Length: 141
Picture 1: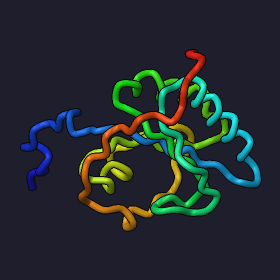
Picture 2 (picture 1 turned 90 degrees about the vertical axis):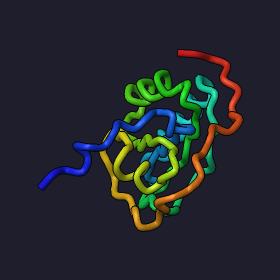
Picture 3 (picture 1 turned 60 degrees about the horizontal axis):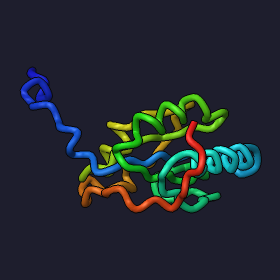
Picture 4 (picture 1 turned 120 degrees about the vertical axis):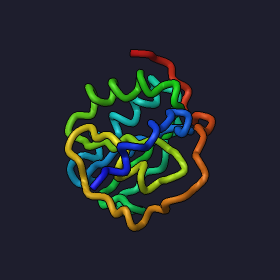
């Protein structure tokens, strides 16, 4: 039997409108570490910092906050997160027209991967473009 992906053309990165990083923490044990990381991100990068979610939300089984960012800063932000995540797990995924695939098939994990509830994610949606950042970085690493 032939693998259908053998005949498929490679996908273009132009499918990616923006990226999300979901920073997971435990409210009882690593919330302060998450607060510190969030502060560092806001000081250093032009991103949109999402709300704190101390309870499960959407497909996420653990407390988290989201960092939305433009494609242009991926190469600067993601390696920085790799070096500075501490004990926190971070899911980084593209935003294309398929949120389920973005979260489950095409992401990268920094730290330990965690369970996600893919059934709560749609297979089709508008591509999310980067929104204007809600941080005003004052320091660059």
